[in-house]
Length: 265
Image (tube, rainbow, N blue to C red; front, side, top):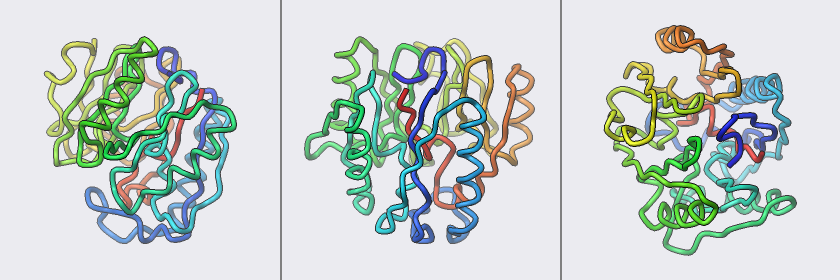
């Protein structure tokens, strides 16, 4: 489970922005048509931020036929060096994972999901000794159960969390910046959903829900989306050392920080 305990995040895979990014899906955060050139700038800054934290980043080429393909998080879930390749939760994205599979097969054992099961990696959070699996419009019961069966084979627990219709994925409104800690967005999730396993829940104001998606590293280092002052203040008061990335062009296509990468070790 890469980066789960110590959040070292040694290596990651990302994919360049599709030149057809303006056609990307956008239903939750987008207020205007996604703009390719602006997204490229944000993506470059994102890769720079990962590398600044010591992550070795592999940048895969764009997929012109798949406007959403920069959101590689959805296309593979890592389980102790194995890559589970799902069936995508939205029909227009089916096929993105095949190109990721080709890359992952160079260094990982591949687990393929059976037909009828769907899952997006954005509905999966690595939380210490377990996987949090969201059931959403993109991840059905069969997909969640299939992933849970494989993580349990490797000795990890699985917790299912219902993702409300107010948001896209579990990671859209939730992340884990350090051991025992959850960052969650008010108005989307409840304390009860985490009470059995989280030692600490840091609540992000509803109007800054987007900022609940973070990338945590060891020693309380944290990458956050720029432009959310209340959340920044909350996290600084908790002792986190922050680096901000302008994610506005990525937000227009309903993407967040974690959406842009798969951490492979």
